[in-house]
Image (cartoon, rainbow, N blue to C red; front, side, top):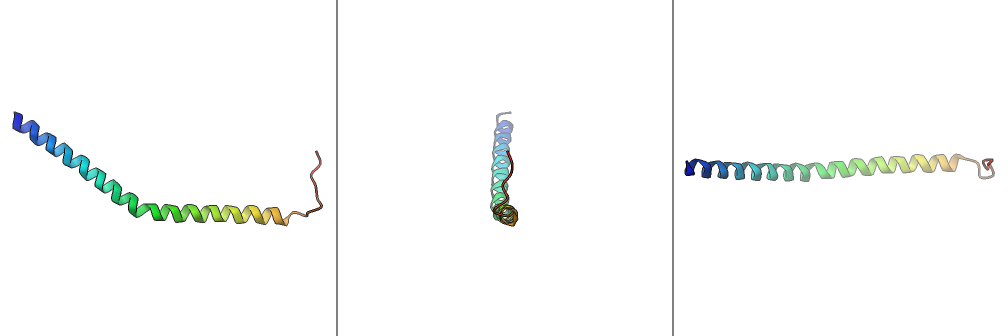
Length: 64
């Protein structure tokens, strides 16, 4: 009985360790992809906003 619970505890520890290692590997592999996608998205937004801003005439002011 004691040996069975000991083996179950070891099994649980191995599973937790396995999940932690896999999660770390997946994050390390996916993080650069997500960062480059986010950077591309932010750059795209900035260029769109600046293009809209510069396309408006300078003398045109909005009425209050």
